[in-house]
Length: 251
Image (cartoon, rainbow, N blue to C red; front, side):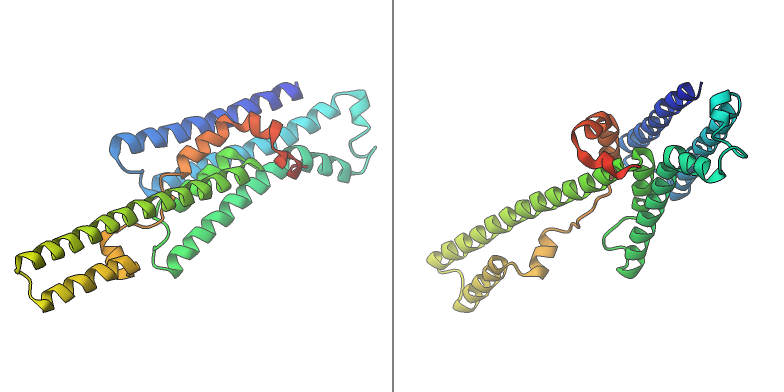
């Protein structure tokens, strides 16, 4: 019976995480925004409570089943020290939930601290909750793959956008020079105006931050990667466990 309950929990937890993530993603697609922070916090509490309930219930059930069988009764006090039961419960039922919740809490605190220190430059207000929820749903140690995937996608996105705006600025520079040359041939621009146009184009060419920031008002944001990355890791959890040696971090 214990194996059946463990199997049931192993299915229910990822299914619940999948439903929550897919629901939030669908809400964002339809509403073009994420739910309020209080609602995200409520979901985190609910999912964390479900994880804690699963671990405690599995521990109690395991103790009860051992007490009903003659052989396994020898593993319980007073026949065996209670340290053995606690160690077994920690390895099989408590370690992963505790590490998962602690990881979610640490990432939440890191993001909120960075937001306070740098005046919300790096993260939006919803991101600490989305990041924590992604960790809770993917679990330990898959949450390490999840965080790595989010950072990788964020860097790729940032690189692509930078290249895009560099191309725009390069085209703007060429257009400014072409207009200046055309106006010069027509005798419309004075020497002072021509010099001003050349200086402006050289600033763009040199990558002046003020000019670039006006031409490309964006920042590196991971807001739209937390939910899809968590869903992807959930779907690929079997492949991750089979082909990536990250499972050795479990005990």
